[in-house]
Length: 600
Image (cartoon, rainbow, N blue to C red; front, side):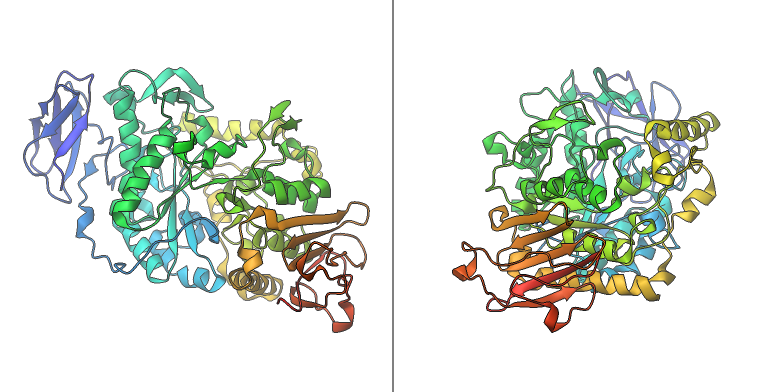
């Protein structure tokens, strides 16, 4: 294990507090602000730091907080774990089927070991990479994880650091990669002691959560190293395959080399040394392809980025919602643009932002660089009642949503329970023991939704937002696994499994080349057809049976106008007589995936 060290450039003297020996021992200082304890501190030893004789504080790089974020840290030797994934070659996130889950509500146990018990379900579904919502230690037991304060530790109620190693090893054993959601743009409000140790934050920039992380001010080099070392640790010591970086647009950095670019280069170097792909997935609101451009070309070097425009286009089209950020979405023309051009706002005016937003994505940039979804923790949890699309959409529209997600040229991501149309909501919940903070969160959540137009969505003048601090809120958000075997849930789950299997079997569907995708639609009749080489995804969103036009155009394979079609998958049963050279007879709210007979 590495020696016990801490960066505390402001301190005059630093002691390590060792309760097991009931002693406080001075640390040796160096000119660069680091302090070090020369004696060995073995695995499992509790310790804390005292700055200038003050109270004991957790280690900023604490690997283990077994008694909560305000208590002593504990030493953790990651090399003690007996890995069984020596044959694991890694998993590239681009083009993979991702599955986002929240450990605390994914299973009744709410732990990483409990999640291991459900990995076989994900394997049968066809998931290729599991994306874990943040695990960094946060106050209390329950929470989303985006208010973590010990970024090197794994939340103890989830099982602690060794449980994460067990989970990753189990996933790799089944051929699935693991992505971890990390939050570097801010820390939570309770248990955040970083500012006592040094200039981790700056008032030169501000974020929605307050003072920004100091990435470009005095002594920012060590703050940047704190973040980069954290990222590399998850890859090297926990065998994580990709990191999802939360809200990177809030990483305000005016340095000559942006933190993301520096991180990208460091991860590329580690990837070369390990001999396997390591991914960085950026959540970005900027609609800027520079995020995934290589560093050598002036880009940020991210492997992929989330693309909310596709979500908004699908959601608004299927639900009819137009409030808030959905105001620019809902037409088939907008959906078609999202399915082909990556961003709807790519240099166009955004009414929601009241400004021109984004930039075009060159057609040669692979769609696999963009992670899309039809539901996520944000898009469900930030609704007033945490209701999923399944609460409002017909079974046919849920199938259409699945088809749009899984047959596009993008990288698809599911949110836990989506695959069976889970009836359970997913709400915002917290577990703060500070009564003032708890009260502020409860009242703030109610106030936050006042201007979001939820009244028109829920057909009510006033919406009673569930209290995030109420234990019933987190309990309501747990998945009900008993649903997967029942009628409509089982049928939808089978459809998702078929779609994912088809994605892996049919090259034009898996292909990320956006130049091989076209969309035709009829706004009035309300049908849309996605063309992927010799494959057609035909969708009828109209109120009655009709025939979406799927006929091959002259510049498509073989230049034939009389191509025979075969149905690969359909939501409603399609009779042979319903398939013509023009298309397929589809009932209302239905979808069929067809292939040219001479190709399929």
